Length: 366
Ligand code: BGC
Image (tube, rainbow, N blue to C red; front, side):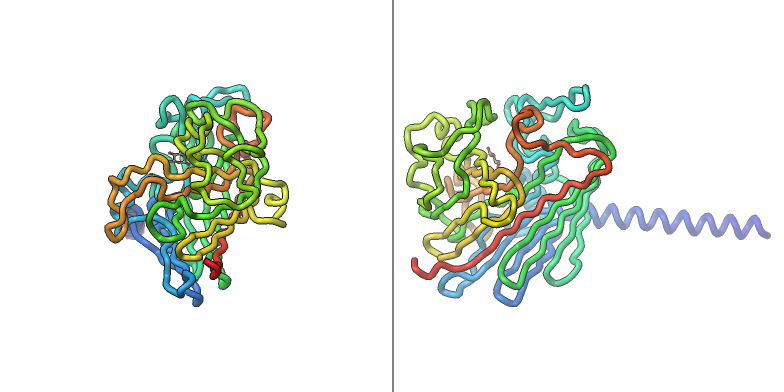
């Protein structure tokens, strides 16, 4: 009799465990949206595939809502290659690692290469291409987590990542990234939204002020290949606000390599300590102003130079050439191979934390 009870008990436990496993894997394998917002007209939609921002709506100067990130209509579209870098968290290493190789603790690691000779944004299957566990913890907050197995895309260590998106009452989106590892590894997480503060069209008349007196010049593969350089006297000088189009087509080797801006800016120390913003971007038509605050040392600015107008976006819009601006608070590209750059090593027992905040207001003078 006792044996029968034990048998029935084990059978029940087994069925329950299987049911749970299949329900979590089937729900985990479907893309879906979660929307958070405040009472002042700001709402943000997050997709569990890629932990991405798919929509970010704020009021414009005439009170009309503007969706200031480029994106698609349905969750399913985000699983397609065309949407790979629309709004996701990029990782494990946002930006490029030269030749997809780095050494750590006396070992050399070879990563998945997906950008000519380099590894870009975590490799072929980066954090933009995986399902995250997502939940809305209150009307203004979404929390996502992902466990990246040891060796994924060539990176060492099991990495546990949590991301929190929170909309503030004052029309800001705070994004916090946490991670821990069980082996020494490298890490550089950021968000890869394409901003267009007018909502559509090319972004060349957007005004940009960047709190950066220096940048990291690159070689033709967009890998920093020399010392940090001053922006003074170059098209990279945004220390006085100017439109993005002002110098983008200037005769300049660096702009030629990127076909426009595709460079990491070295942010002022006052940005990392939280006393000043990293940048301010203004949509000339909408009057929407976005400032980014961050504790990261760099800001990758990519001006949508590879957009070709061939991809259909939300509401029939297209990926207009230079119509989306990626502004990515992050560590410097190729940092794992550059001991002179701030370190991106994460050791066991330590917690990685990156905080960035996207704050919105309206400039009515336009
Ligand atoms: C890079 C670009 C790249 C883009 C992919 C940016 O962060 O700097 O070179 O083409 O991501 O969407």
